[in-house]
Image (cartoon, rainbow, N blue to C red; front, side, top):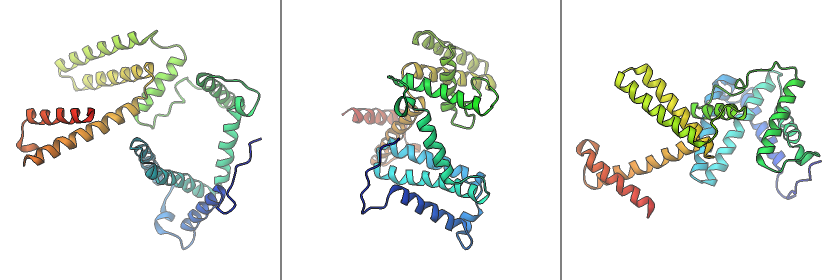
Length: 275
């Protein structure tokens, strides 16, 4: 049994707030509701779900907790929107979704809610995957290839991370980071050959191989490649903005300067970061 939640009697419960959101969504989709909301379908809402997810990640990267609270609300709305459309078609309700995740969390944490044991994060993950496989067998799902469970419709960098992690868990891996670094040097050499041959198709292939190997290096070093690249993107934005500001202070823009002057301002931005 879960312990009871402490609740301020003078404030609406989380459940009441969720029910209010469900009511609002039903009103928007109902007769006399919002024309835009009533027009939406499962497929038309998908781009907004992706956009809201990235806005959540952006708020986390910026450590903007007020924005994060708002963006999480927008993301929760996406789940309620899908559930409302499903309810209208007699498929399932938001209550079914909540029941499913509650049951799943309890079932897949036997070391917390049962008599299982797991003392490390690695043991927890291994048991989670075992239980997941058991659930599929109970549902009579056909056994698929090891990598078939990795979603194809996700950012390529994240897909590469999941693919390499799955393969490594099956033993298809380098013995240490040294092998990965050697593979990276090999891929760089192959990219150089493709460039010299001026083959666009081969260049694209070798760039992909190099990126995939870099993802494996990140895995060995305990780094999330998606997060690492997002941080580098953020750093580039900040430095580039300082270069732009520096040029403006000199009364010039990018068309009126040289690469040497831009590099000077870039180095100044780097130095300022370390101060």
